[in-house]
Image (tube, rainbow, N blue to C red):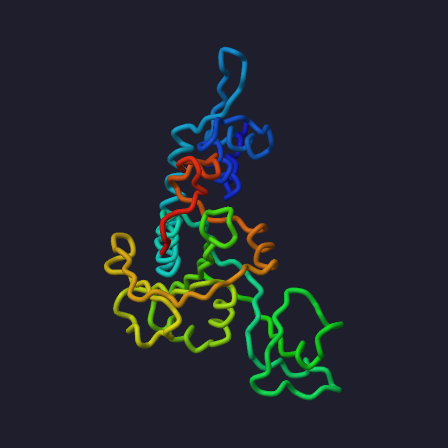
Length: 289
């Protein structure tokens, strides 16, 4: 009789194993759990009351640990630096998203060729640019509407304070640069930096100490540098960012609703909103990085 073939484990299996590890182990009774049971990663237990639960076997725990170590080795220096700074933001009580795709207006940029209405003259230099989330073609002159240049921004880290008061959100963008070449390349894209400024109140560059001098970074951007190795080093704030009051546009709110924020390894899977706050507090943290 041919021995049964051991199922090939995918990231979906590892995700389910992590969920079981973090929970009480109530079974879903789907195909993934059947394959994990057959592979010896899970064991089915029955309580004296007759309730069945799942637990990770020793082999399952070893498999998760090996996968975690492999993922850590596969990360680039940029990703590891971003993860380290994200952990600092999370520790400061902020809600953090990684590489969100956000739609932003680049103020004062020239409209793409062919986008202007053929019967209208170009917008005079210095004319105000209308910034709107919704199409207002019926109310805005076509020439001014054409001057609204939208671009997709993808900040490395986008974060807000953990608060229910909109005025206290303090949205921030942190651009992570692991090398001088990467930093200088980013500094050449003025429209990209303008998009970040439109999306947040403060924008920072984060990079290892020594790859650039503060004078090389535009003065409205803040600077965080890492001293030492990515694993053992510490961050230092060299220059605070210029603060500009910003109300999050509706399109950004929708992107945040559809995305999953990062979560600290120390945060319980079922953490309650505002847990750990004194009575009367809103869950805000001390001033964040």
